[in-house]
Figure 1 (cartoon, rainbow, N blue to C red):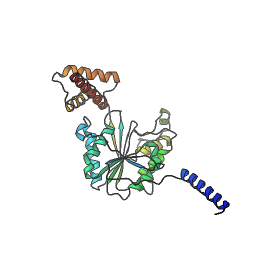
Figure 2 (figure 1 turned 30 degrees about the vertical axis):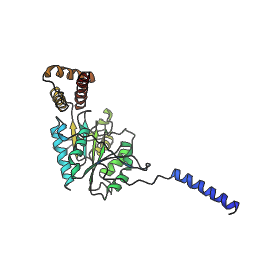
Figure 3 (figure 1 turned 90 degrees about the vertical axis):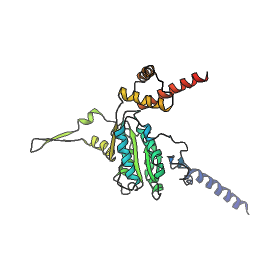
Figure 4 (figure 1 turned 60 degrees about the vertical axis):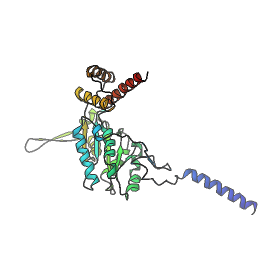
Length: 297
């Protein structure tokens, strides 16, 4: 081999190495039997869909004081599993009221019937078409789970999600639904000035019709892609204490003298400015830890 040929080969190898660094990695096929929950990591990762080996083991019976929401989303999920018409679901409202926990409990309840969950971060929503293509011919039923979903006013990625939910030529496959949680009902920030864009039209019967401005219409159009809206509101004091008692009993540390612990639980919530299910669970863990520590000393 001549010196010129060797030089050309070396240059070709250098170019190939640079191309390998630029080109996306060859995707690794998901091991669907390895888990019931997965996390989408992005198109630029070799393992685009990573199994979640230790998902939370909540059951539907652990979800307290939101029976109406639990009944509705459980029914919708059963319809989905049976191949009947079902809706995408938006769970919105106060923090710590069980929105995310309810979806995780659904997975544990219905995993034996073929339900699977894929967690998708907001910044990966632009890759929804690629996710849907991956799931299209699978026999399982998939919930795409978007936790704490919200968009800023200048974030255009919500348009991609809007098209995927309804309006795109492709749309969702028959084995995919989207369940999203958010603190915002319409997923986007709303400003007082936008209400001033609304126009009023007087009809022949002297009734006024209200037409929202373009800005408000655009924001509502995304949340309306979800066929079911479930609202979650702050718990009352009695509901908060009921959740505290439930977890103390489940952790086997519920005392016979409830009143002192009740007062401590209320103080715990007051310090955090929230009477939520999350705070109730945190108090129960704190109390159980103290009891265990005292028993070991």
